[in-house]
Amino acid sequence: MSLTFETRVAAAAIAQSPKLMRQEFTRVLQVSAKAADGKRHRLAFREVLYFKLKGALESGGVQMHPEDRRALYQVLVDKPTEVGAWRRKGLRLERTGEVPVTMDLTKIARATHATLRAYQRGAGLVERRADLCSGELVFRGTRVPVAQVVEQFRAGVPVAEIAEDYPQLSAQALDYAELSARIGKAPGRPAKPLQIQRSAVEAADR
Image (cartoon, rainbow, N blue to C red; front, side, top):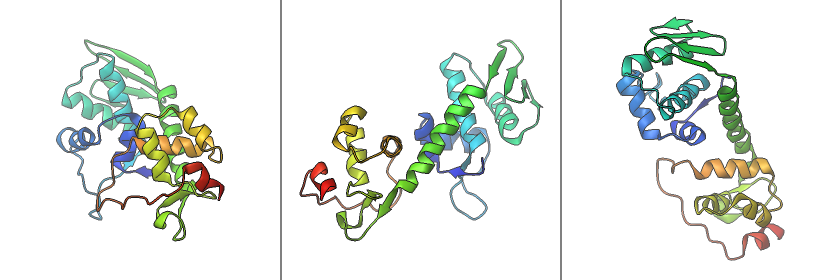
């Protein structure tokens, strides 16, 4: 997978803290927060998988010191078959020592890949038009503001209810909005509030 992702997008996809992920890069993995071109580091798929796997292991009670985490990162990202206590054979991961670990990465890799791809594809379902919602993003082919659907997810409205309110939105579009709701605000000036005079359904039907 050649795509790369902003830290905040990757964090939302795997339910991790973007702040803690950045700290892990600089303090433990010793990876610069800046790329060679001076821009922020973007995560490749295997890096996202590292954080997903690290979270799964820690939630399962597996404690890893910094050297152990660096070894796991190298096995997954740099692709050597063995570093420290970690060994990888295809999608089979093993750790030797006092607390041995054996994992099949197939399920976790596929789930992570699917979530990231859903966000990437969903980004192609939105557009910005000067004649709609003061130029704010809308879902392509509709008059539904993306921000309005995202805010409903943030407010805890059930997905079934949102789908009923916006029948013109595909499941893929709703998946994109739901993931976007978990992503923090992008750096820079805050967007201007949407000026919406009609209900979402009325706006969509105009």
